[in-house]
Image (cartoon, rainbow, N blue to C red; front, side, top):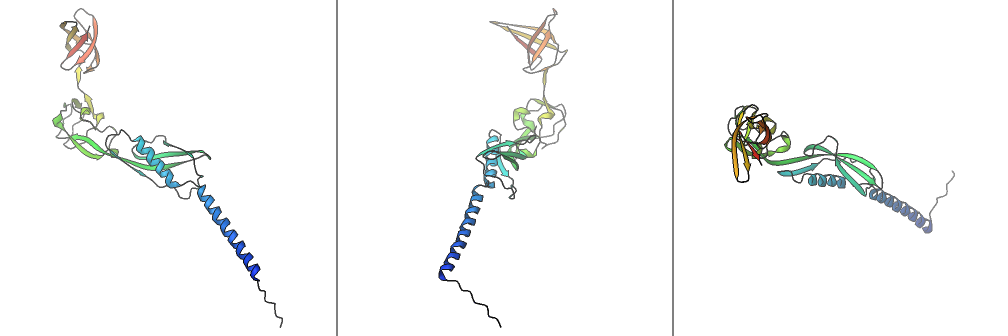
Length: 245
C-alpha cells in the first residue's frame, strides 16, 4: 500500500492564509458599503414627495393629511444630489395622485410615486328640501364636516357660494350643494322696464328705461331711455340700474 504524505502547514503559512482571508472579507465589506452609499435611499424619496404635497396643499381650506405609497425596493437608483418633484400630467393635487421625482445630478433618472392627499373640511348641505328655482337663504343650508377629496370639485365650501343663488335642481334635505347646480338671481332681465338712477355731485335723477340685456347684480347692463339713447350702468337688485356721472 502506498502511503500519501500528510501535508502540514507551518505556523507562518497559516498566518498568511488568515491574512488573505481577512483581506477578502474587508474588501467585500467595503464594496458593499460603497454600493450602499452610492444607492438612493428610497425612504428619502418618499419623504421628499410628502413634503412637496404638504407644501402644495398650503391654503386649501381644511385639514390636510398626506400618505405616500411604497417605492419598488428592487429599483437600483444612484444617489441623487439634486431632486425635483412635480405632479404628473393630468393629476390633481388631492385624492389619489402621482408625483414625478426626477434626479438632475450626478446621474439622471426619474420615477413616479403614488400618494393620497385627504382634506377634511366644512361643506354645505341642504338643511331642508329645496325646490328647483328656489332662492337659497341662510336658513336653507347647514355646514357638515367630511373628506372633501371624495366629493365633487364644485362642492360648496363657503356659504356665500350658495346664499343668494337660485337652485337649478330640486334637492332633499341633507344633500351636498354643488356650485354647478346654483346660479345667481338675475337682477335685471332683458326687455324688463327698470328704474334708471343717475347719481352726480349733489343730485340724483330717476327715470324709467328698458333693459337691453340680462345681468346679475354688479354686472354691466345696457338700457334704452325714452329718447332712444342707450346708456350703460350697473345692475342692482330690485330692477334698478345705476349710472354714476
